[in-house]
Length: 71
Image 1 (cartoon, helix red, strand yellow):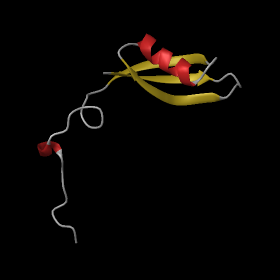
Image 2: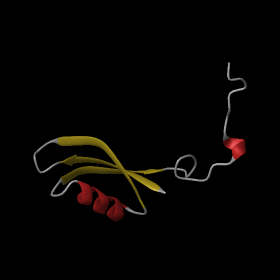
Image 3: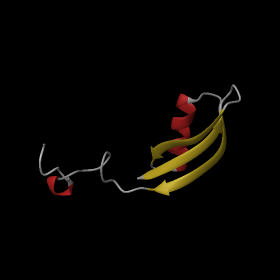
Image 4: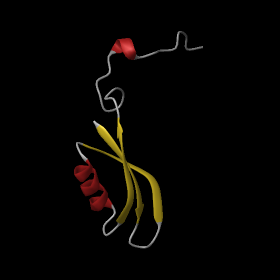
């Protein structure tokens, strides 16, 4: 899965940094940005490859670390 980090200017002129969206490709991520921030200007877009562990992927019991005691 790809994570895209955007720097945009909203239609009101506000700069938004570190805006991240997941997508199969940059076009899909840009569509997601445009759905939320209508009429924005994308100033910068960088791609990061992320692993699918944790929140978006599968988690098994062996990968979890649990506290030894509750006291």
